[in-house]
Picture 1 (spheres, rainbow, N blue to C red):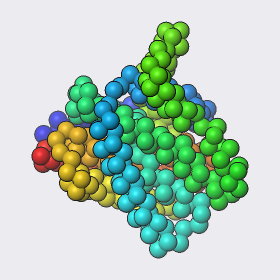
Picture 2 (cartoon, one colour):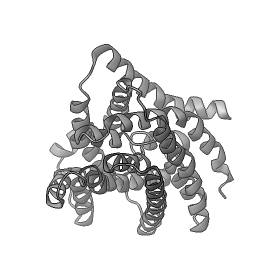
Picture 3 (tube, one colour):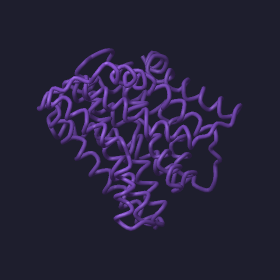
Length: 305
């Protein structure tokens, strides 16, 4: 069973990431250009297309939003406690928070969901919603966190307003709510860009990881990985039990909590020059270690009734 999970669910994702790292070693690619392509083009496109074309029920949306809010609140409290105990400066505190709260719900979680559950529309809708919420959190609070200690609130709000992900989500809901049909002239390129999101994001992650240089952050990186990869899914199991969520919905939610630190935390760190080395090390370590932890979580999913 473990071998099947590794070969069919986890290692296919790792191979694409490894290819990106290899390309970085050979060609020394420009990570800032790749980060801009992901933040301002591929991510907004996939969010719009998936939200526009999916149709989760109101009840499912409420369950997912409630779960996500509790999950993020618990992780935020834990991160604040760790940051105070470790006496982190503002920049590192923001980077640590991002490495724990922002996880790869899109470029890792989405293909993982498909590999584990197949083309199940229900579980895919859940992952799309989690991806939407993660993108909203990253494009608002994430941008605020890496800039608030060095910008006034007006400048920070201006920076947030420049992030296109929020507008893509709003546009998708507006089109669905008012039954607006996207013209084929726009729909075709949007689908083409969205189809390339997973490969582009995983390759970008590999490129960034391929340029990581290890420094004196081992303890902090270990703390980040422990909370993200172990506490995260354990908290997910606890919350679905407390909230009375069962079956495939619960399994999809727990799986979404088990994925490693988001490449978006690196993209934000690079874009706004806030502890990019720590962010890269946290993503690299959590991605590598997730081979073990995600495999364990998948093996435990059948225990959820």
